[in-house]
Length: 107
Image 1 (cartoon, one colour):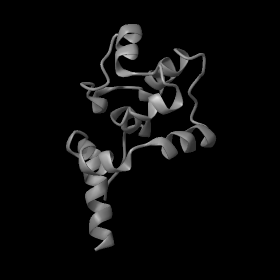
Image 2 (image 1 turned 135 degrees about the vertical axis):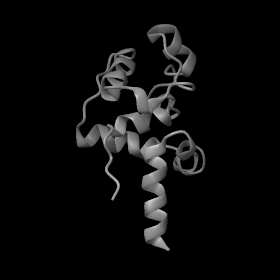
Image 3 (image 1 turned 60 degrees about the vertical axis):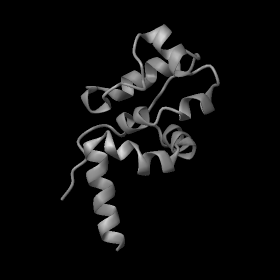
């Protein structure tokens, strides 16, 4: 049995390309310059409260992140699932376990 013990927002931060689809200014460089962390090297499994990180990013564009169904659906519709499936699983151990279990189930 696989238990997802981290916030799904950590996985969102792992596939951060969706941010520029929300607002074109939310580039990795802009976030680094304004918040001091680089999304491309961030170990998302080590972030204690990824939803707070997302909220900080959203606040850069005068928005706020919440865990509402509407917000999560918006992000889910913008994610690059090919990148998640082929590359992000190698960076995020729990995500790989979940995808491996899904693949096994679908066989």
